[in-house]
Image (cartoon, rainbow, N blue to C red; front, side, top):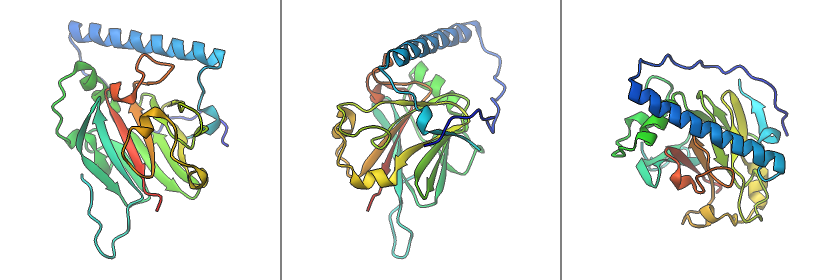
Length: 240
């Protein structure tokens, strides 16, 4: 267990270009919606209906590759989604660390901005623009950590963060500059497939972590399912 300590984000927000009056009004509406969601989340936290990820958080310091003979096996694959549509192919991960970001040259790894998307939703485009430096997945001895490199919160659901026997797993909010152990290897070895509705609907083997940029989902938010979130990731771990 790690205690939360203030952390200075490694990266600062980029300077935004000048916006038109219509774009400013639209952005103000989105910010008001985010503030209302945060206020509702705080209210439910006080009532004990939602769980904070603080006890799990520590401060932070394209394709599916076909395995060839002698090549290191992948330890996870990553899928990028926009609402109910998967964008691009699965990204196979062999290295111990992977950066997932939107625009080059903000890292070496999975660049979401290079994927072809036909989604014209203004909300999706707004969230895309906020992904920025994105997240970093790191495989360590005790599990897989996710570091939020962006300037906005991310939201994570994982079977090893909560009681897998519960009917619905909690969504954990991770602020910029912080990390969370999204996948615990020791817990995973003793867990059966989680009962969570979203996970049981997926015809996949192994364990899955769901991660949304900027917008949260679940009982604390207006969006009940991650498929309603504008931009999100699915990380499927290879436990063999």
